[in-house]
Image 1 (cartoon, rainbow, N blue to C red):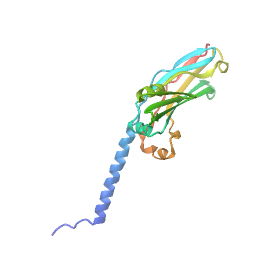
Image 2: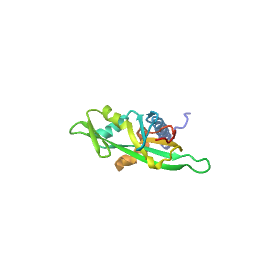
Image 3: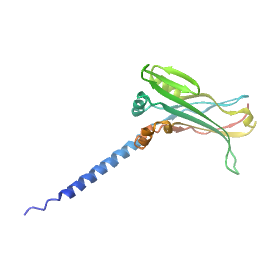
Image 4: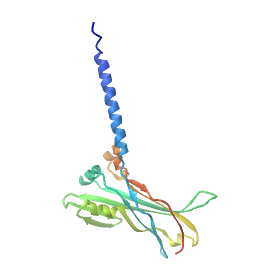
Length: 196
């Protein structure tokens, strides 16, 4: 006597479970691959005009973001620097904050990359040159001299990230499955005493 054959419904459920387990496993593996960003130490310049910072966040642009870029979608990168006065008896006091936004775009007709910082724009022949400009922050004014007290201790906090909220809506819906699009880094805090 032969053993009874499983019903087609049972086989279908078993196949669906296996497919679901495979999909969950694949998405977990995909989340592990996030873009790594190497940061350089913050270099502070104190002058009578204020406090300036120079640094870099070095990363490789993922292939999927390169494809988005070559299709004409601009990428926006943001560097935010904050000066705080540390207080042991209360919350830290935010003295000044500045934000630098860099727009990276590809021009298909000219086959060139354009980097825009504020009102300034510059064209580059290849992506590596354009990314070099995006990754470096030079002489960014964080605070004016009038905002800082001589002899006072402060801390500079800075972070760099790809601003995904500036992407078109269809790309924002699919961001959760694109873990390598998460490009962000927090620089180690830099303590200093204001001496212009």
